[in-house]
Image (cartoon, rainbow, N blue to C red; front, side, top):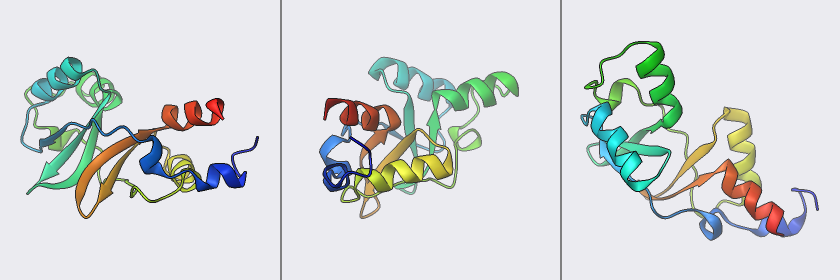
Length: 133
């Protein structure tokens, strides 16, 4: 079954997204953000400013920006986040999500409805969904 199959196009992001998403204020330190990610077992945290999602910090950001660039571990996450935030809404279909991930070269998309983070969808989620159908 190809991904452009109508069945795949009818599957919406909200049907397979993970609703367990951690978000932190942009002033939180990289160390505290990393500890939260480890405690919860996630690979990304959405960064907020004035309670609005403005960026994302992934495990890759830690590897590249903290380690490779020797940023101090108490650096605020606003300095290492990927921004502007590339996101999607929960009513988009998987084809749109997959295309956005591919064209923007990202593997994690926060799902945002009305300026609120409601979930996250990853490339692994999409692959698993396709493999199961």
